[in-house]
Image (cartoon, rainbow, N blue to C red; front, side, top):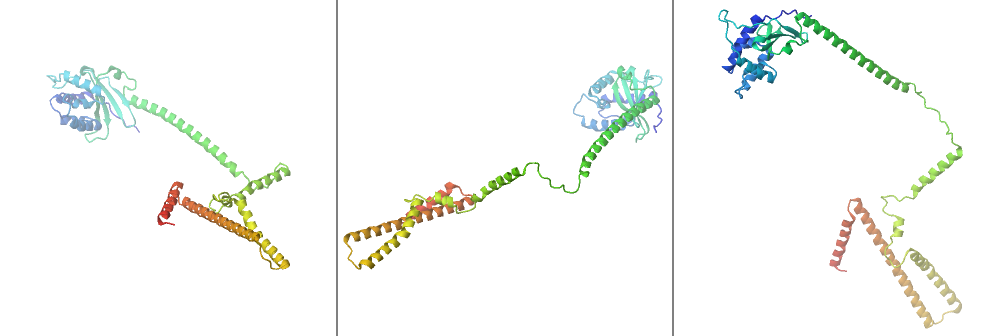
Length: 364
């Protein structure tokens, strides 16, 4: 329920307020009588900012009575140009015509009154204070230079009742707009929830059992060919050499070393070494059994010597090939070990060269 507020009485409110204004040019502090006449917010503004606004000598606490900086400067010039002399008979300031008051309700608890003072070129804005330490009543909310456009503003009403009715009408319009917006948002949310429900309901309509296996419409021959191709494809992995396997038969056969004999020569030598000697022994035994002991001619001795030399050369060649292969396999194993530890190829080569130099220092 809106409180019934009586209109302000300018003849009792303005004279004590206007009498405090010229004191601003004589004292840096507002008079004690000014505080109860101001609204709580304006009173705190004057008390707090006046104590910190001592750096500028041209501005007085009058500039704190207006919330607009430009209007505050103009207000100070107006007060400075006026003569605040009381009437010689009544002893009070003559206000002139102050009957054109207007009202404006900002919300259910805030009601303002505009009191223009044309003869003083000022307009006082009052606000109704229901709860104040200085007492209940109309308090000065702002002091402005006189503005005729502000006086003709249609947002201000001629009485408190009209101001209340105008506020309630605008408030009802705002409430209807707000309700319409809320209804629209509710419909949108309901539509979105319905869409979400329909979406998730599709999963509820899905059958719980596993669907039966259905054959592909493709012919069986193509399926057989496809599985066979897959088998061929995966069969390739059986011939892949694992990366962690230290012995690779392909590498050993491909990287045997710089020997004087290749792999085929090595195989042929091994075959001849296994078959030559038994053949010679068999022939010798057969001849000796038939002919008996006979002296060997010089030519046979030379042939035996050549055969022994060839066997010795083949043996040394085989030994050399075996040693070379062993050295190569050992170096490759050590290199794989170094790579597994994160060692680079250049570092491994330097270690091998350094060890060879050390062996050179130690001697053969």
